[in-house]
Length: 212
Image (cartoon, rainbow, N blue to C red; front, side):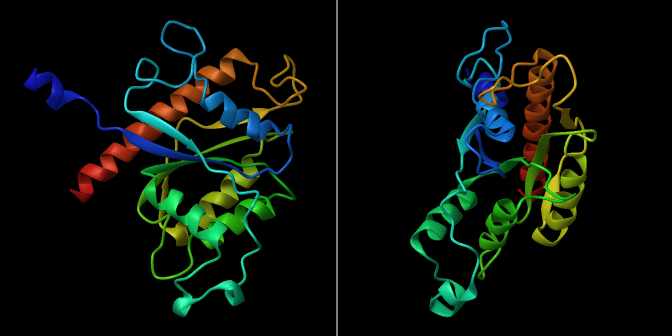
C-alpha cells in the first residue's frame, strides 16, 4: 500500500480560461470538451480519476472583469476590485493553466489580454513559474498566430508553455469540427486535446519537482 501511495500522482488544479466572450464560441466549446475528455474506455464522462488521474479542471470565467485600470487599485497597488480579487485568487490557486485563445487580428482577444494584465499586477505575480498550454481554433492557421503572440506575452509573465503537442483546429475544414452550439465534435481533435492535457500534466509535475 505504501508503494502504491508513493507512486500516485499528486492532484494538479488546472485553471482553464477561454479568451472569447461569445456564448457559442468554439473556445467555450473547447473548455467544455476539456471537462468531458473521453475516458480510456472511449466513453465521454466528466473528467475523473479514470480519465486523467491527478487532474482537476477549474473553468475560470473572465467575462466579468473590468478593464485593467490602475485607478481601481488600492493599498499601494495590491488591492483590487472584488471581481478582480476573486479572479486573482483562482489563478493563484492553480498549478497550471490551459488557455483557449481565439485569434483576433493576428493576436489574442482584448478580454484575454485584460485577464493576463490583472493577474500580473501588484507584488504577487499570479502567473509566474507555472506550466501552461494553449488550444486554438480558427481559419487557415487554426489560431496559430494568436498562440504565438500569447507565448510572447507569457515570457514577461514567467509562464512556461508546453511545446508539443499543439492543438490548432482549422475549424472551417471538413469534416465539421464543432456543432452549431460551439461544441467540439471531431474525434481526432478530442484525442489530441487529451494528449495536450497529459503533456501539460507531465510538464507541470516536472516544474514542481525542480522547485522542490
